[in-house]
Image (cartoon, rainbow, N blue to C red; front, side, top):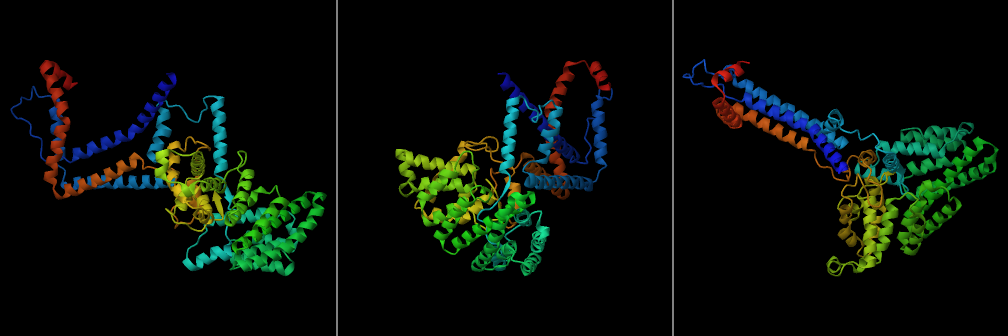
Length: 566
């Protein structure tokens, strides 16, 4: 009972902090109506004796005389100014809501006024258990908002640039390309590059923002020596076809293997040699992975699968490249579902980070067992079988991890080229997954129908996804901001959960429209608006006048006269 009472008290304090907006608006509204009163003086009964007349009527008479001196331009200007101020507040509130997802005035009310009213600071831990839970949740939120390299990213020269030539649109954002430049500097450079002229040139090339400057630097490095990273840059950015990119990557493989074998023999001779060997390892793994992707794009899928398997066996600890996701996509293309299940058994583990590829591929395999015979009408009559229940649960699990994917798989939202980096559980990851895996879902008969019938049921299990999840941690609130940085401006970013407009924005919009209408009507029909305003005020103050009359009838006139004078 104490916890319930405390919760009700906190809600009451929040409401009080928020109610200042209503009070301010009500005062503003009443003041507007007061100045709309006609410039006709209030007629007071002359027969009333001044000795028995309360001082209140003298105040009303003074107010009436003051209002009588005002011109119609004043009323039009006042209502017009009120409408302008309300419109400016509306524009600011809308901009703040679109950028930060909350109302500015609501945030100020809860953050600043509520503590003054005695509200409990949410940041203060109530006990060690809740503090540890919040810390774990914050850590998970930070990890889930981390931007990852897209394991299936396209070739910049052969694919992204071709899209730009055809459509005139830039598929990559500056933020995304800047992250790629940082990755290249991390993977392809080391502290000893200045000792080798070609590597020193490439170290500067990875920092260049101008693509032509990077390409020129790569050609300059190749004139000095067979440089593997120079071939990588040319294959990624200068090659206009996948065939040309594959040819350059094969040349990079020859140079990279020589450097790798040499540094492997010297890696234990010091920290500098160990750093160089680590760099050469990253270069070699990157080249082999991209060669496998070239084979996959050119239709040699079995060759690509073999190259990926060999690469995962040779370098089992380099999980940062997420080569298993490339392998899963290639195996699905071969319809080798048993091999796909074997890969999932290894990587779909509770201790390993999840991805849309892992979750939705697992759902696809379970849906494949029942989707060809699934009928929503039959299922509603007889209930779901065990296999169907497992498939539905797998779909709910996948949708909870990334709720943006179904709209792309069901073609309810148009696809664009995937970015070079993705945010797990975000719209960017959904685009990257659907871009490559939509064809695999279409190939399985009835899989998309099953997804269409069941995916929205996930949201009934997690009514408050930002506060509590079902199988995963709560959905991170940072995905929208990060996705807007990763995805081009012409794409409408998918937002989850859908944000409702705060009440104050709607109220301000109504106030702005109402005052603008009053300004127009006052300008066109000042006398008629005065009649309406007077009638409204008469109705509004009728209860107060009734109470005052009752008080006057009860109290002696002399005592009432003394009170009014005081």
